[in-house]
Length: 191
Image 1: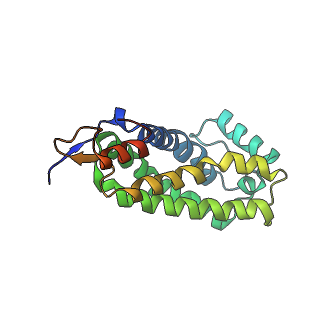
Image 2: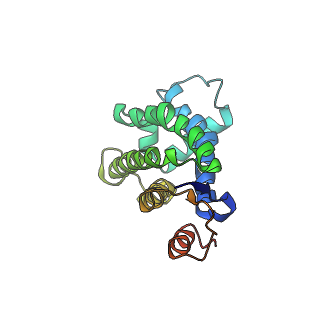
Image 3: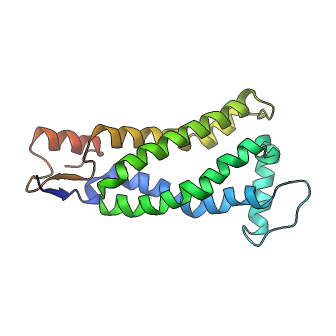
């Protein structure tokens, strides 16, 4: 059966996912996370070319006040950052394209990405809550990390629910059939 793309304007939930991917690609992965790879020891370092010194100072201030794990940078932590830099960064770039264009081949990679992200963040939060590098105020750290729990859950829900999350049968209106109405509702009420 021929399929036609559902316009992005009718996939409002995907617009929010796209914003999440863009923030992660442009700010988190190659700005915040990169700092953790280029500065091994936060107590003795030379400012790198990138990220800029004021950003490094801001990240270190955050870590000193709220997030001792970010400052400690144990080997397992750095591995999660390498996963972000080497796997998630490229995924974000490809996913932005795929979600914009409604390419359904991104469905399974989105589920895989989300599963890995949930695993990493759960492990990190476990250490932040009760580990060696326990956060002085876990609620602040939890709230700061909440998007990296909620978005993967939503992406898994979104991609698992429909085998064709970005398309509908050719010739089908955006509303009027039970499947189209159900899919439009799941996509944020578009119809």
